[in-house]
Length: 308
Image 1 (tube, rainbow, N blue to C red):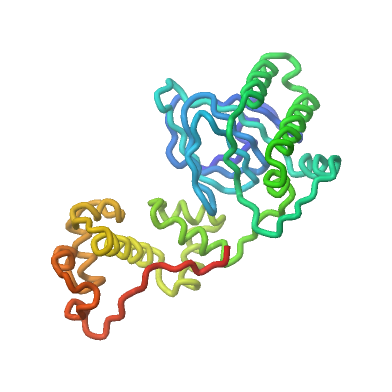
Image 2 (cartoon, rainbow, N blue to C red):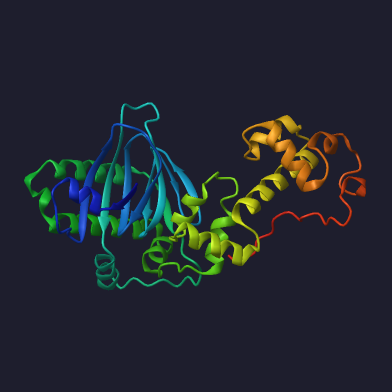
């Protein structure tokens, strides 16, 4: 299931037309693992209870009780855990791009940084933010909670505070154009997700593509099917752990993303022509070519193929 926000919350509350700024007190009675979320607007996410983990197009992050999120409109995967609480709860403050454009124009905010803007910011809680959250919670209990004007004033207040606190970092985030779906963006997603154990379906969602389009794009850029490429990267990681970090084969197979040792050992031998146990016992690796199949060229460790 794909959740489009904030429309999903508005529908649950019987709202048809959303204002430029909307605030929701979100509670979940069950933990959620990697739910697919389409953010249609910018959003502040304040944790009240539990913990959040965000998988985004270019990065992922765990959010604890002393942090909050500021995200751009995007596709992402959300994991929500209780972490000792009886429920997951957060305050979500959505604001449209037009509202943000009016805000930056009103206060004449411009960025001077000539580099790629992050897709989200993990910010630290402080006394002001804590009091701000309490103020939002109090407002939600009042009849004026349905007033768009009060929420616009509160989000404008918060944005001004963050500009004062973080300066150019926040201004750059607010004023930068949305990242485009370039080949470098695609490669950044793929090469940054090797250790995240995301399915191809989840990766295609983050890239805002259908699964068939994702596979076609992947093969165009990497000249190999995605399942084969990801397995090779996991095997390369296992080889590095065996050779350079002195780990045993029984230690590395789980870290390399394999469910059992047997499938790992068979795949390793098919890829490199030698079992992980034999490799570990060899003191001449990798210069001792007796272990390489005839004509086999070792695949070099993954190198970045994009410019940050």
